Image (cartoon, rainbow, N blue to C red; front, side, top):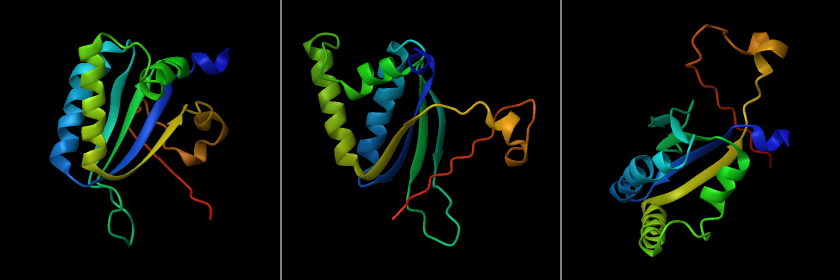
Length: 142
């Protein structure tokens, strides 16, 4: 189906409790996990998020691209599958526990890119030949 063919972007906003523990987890994710998922890559990472008229609520935001929804589900949301050998599963479990210990709070969204924005709403974007800008606009309804 079309939805399973679209790249999926995991967007995560993070507030640290123990930054060192979290950094060790991120090193593991970037160096040992993502290279083993064909088509997955860290595409954006920014520290010290700026918020207008407020203290930053988040210490970091990152975006990881997965080739499609099923691969994201299999490798991220359904981690109880038969991933590698017992040592691999134990390491993944340990690193996820370390991640949880290092975070005070996090929000995670899975999204696809709306590639029609440039054509349908050109006034919203500064179109250039380089696609290096990122706008993430999250709205919370009460």
